[in-house]
Amino acid sequence: MGIFDILGPVMVGPSSSHTAGAVRIGQFGRLLLGEEPGRAVIGLHGSFAATGEGHGTPLALLAGLLGMDPDDEGIPAAMEIARERGLDFRFETTDLGEVHPNSVRMALKGEDAALELRASSVGGGRIQVWGLDGFPVFLEGVYPTVLLVYPDRPGMLAMVTTILGNAGMNIATIKAHRDSRGGQALMTVELDHTPAVGILNALRHLPYMEQVRFVPRLGFGG
Amino acid sequence: MTLVAGTLSAYRAAALERDAPLWSVFLAEEAAQSGRDPSALEALMRERIRVMRQSAARGLGNPQMSRSGLIRGGAHRMAAWMDSGASLLGPAFTRLAATALAVAEVNACMGRIVAAPTAGACGVLPAALFTVADEKGRSEEELVRAFFTAGGVGLVIEHLASLSGAEGGCQAEVGSASAMAAGGLVELMGGTPLQVDHAVAFALSNVMGLICDPVQGLVEVPCVYRNAMGAANAVVSAEIALAGVESAFTADQVIETMGRVGRRIPEEFRETARGGLASLPAPGCDSCRGACGNA
Ligand code: SF4
Image (cartoon, rainbow over the protein chains, first blue to last red):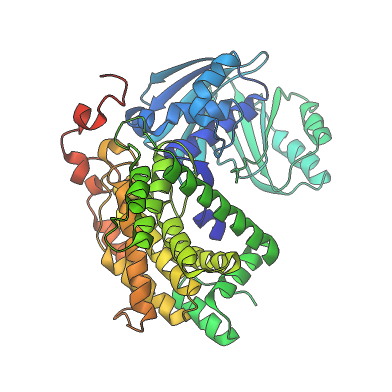
C-alpha cells in the first residue's frame, strides 16, 4: 500500500468495488479465456445483484470482458459496444452461497476455449478469483499467473517447478487443487515476472499436460 | 534511511530529525518503498491532479444526471449561483462547495475520477486543495507537495484505522478525505508538521461517528453533499491550526479513536443501505421527475 493506492486508482465511477473491481473481474475472464469472448452468461450475486444496476456493475463487467481498463470512458457504453462486437451476453441473478456480497459467476465461450469463473470484488478495486471450472482457486490478478490442468498424478509439480526454476522464474505462490471426481488437477502459479512464450510452450509439452493458460498482471489504468 | 512508519508522529519525528518538511518525508518514504525515482513520483502526482481537474471541469461545465435520477446537475447549478453574486461568503467558498459536488457528481454518473481515498469521497481533496491553491496563487509544484502530505495522512489512517465506509462508516471515507485535505492545506500554506497534525486531528474529531447510509445503495445521496461538507471541514480545520490553535489530542489518537468507533458502528450504518437516510421511503418519482425514463 502506497500513496498512489490512497490517491487512486484513476477510475470511472461510481464505486471502486461495484465498478472498478467489476471491470477487473471482466478483464481477468477475458485474459484467462485467451481470446475474444463470443458468449457470456453472467450471474450476479448479493450486492452485485441488488445494487449493481445503479452502480453500473453489469456495464463494468462487460467492459472488462471487452478489454477496457477501469478508467476507460467507454464503460458506460459497454452494452452497445458489446452488441457491435457481436458479444452475445446475458445477465441473471444467482445465489453463490456464503460468499462475499460483491460476487459474480461468469460462463465464457470463445471460438476455442470455454470457462466458468467465480470471483468477488473485495474493496478498493481489488478482486479475488475463487472458483475456476469447479476448482477452488485464490487469485488476485496482482501477479503474472500460469494455470495448468492435468490428470492428478505424482511428479507434475516437480516438473513444472523445474522448468520455471531453470528459466530463472521466481515463484511467488504455487497451489495445486484436485478434483476428486474426474481425477483432474489444477495448478496455479503466481510469478514475479512475465514468462516468455517459450517457457509456456515448454510447460505445454510436458507429458500428460492438458492445458496451460496464462494471465498477465492486471493493470489499473491511470 | 528508510522509515517504517505507520503513525503521523513517526513521520513528524523524521521531519524534525531531517529538518525537512513533511511532504518530503512522505515522498522519500514512497520512493524507498516503491523503488521509483522521486521525480517519477512527482510526475505521477501531477497526472493524478490533471485527472482531478478534468473531473471538476466536467461537473461544473455540464449538468451531471445520474441513472437513478437522484443527481441532477447540482454542481452546474451552484456555478451559476456563484456567478450571480449571491454567494453567502463570496465566490471562493461557493467554488469550494461547487467543486466538491462537481467531482462527486461526475463519479456518480460514471465519469472518470481519482478515488481519493475512495470513489465516494473523491470530491473532497480536489475541492479543498484546488480552491485554496487558486485563491492563494500557489504553484503547481506546491500543490503536488500538498497532495503528497494529504496522501501520507491517508496512509496513516489506513494503517491505524480504515478508509472504508463498509468497515468504519462515512467518518472513514469522507471524514478521512477531509482530514487528508486539512493536512494538505496546512502544507500548501507552509505550515509546520505539528500544524498538519493539529489540522488532521480537528478534521477527524469534527466528523467522529458519521455513519454511512447511501440511499438506494448508490453513491449519490447523501454522499455528493457530504463531499462539500468534507471540503469545508478541511478548510475550517486547516485555518484553525494555521492560526496557532492546538488540538487537545494528537492526530494518531483521534485516528485510532475513529477506527474504534467505526468498528462499533452497527452494520446497518456501514454501507448496507439499511439505516439512516437509506431507511427513509424511496424518494421515487417525485425526485426523479422523469429522468429515469419510466415516467
Ligand atoms: S455515505 Fe457511505 S457511500 Fe456515501 S460517501 Fe459516505 S461512506 Fe461513501
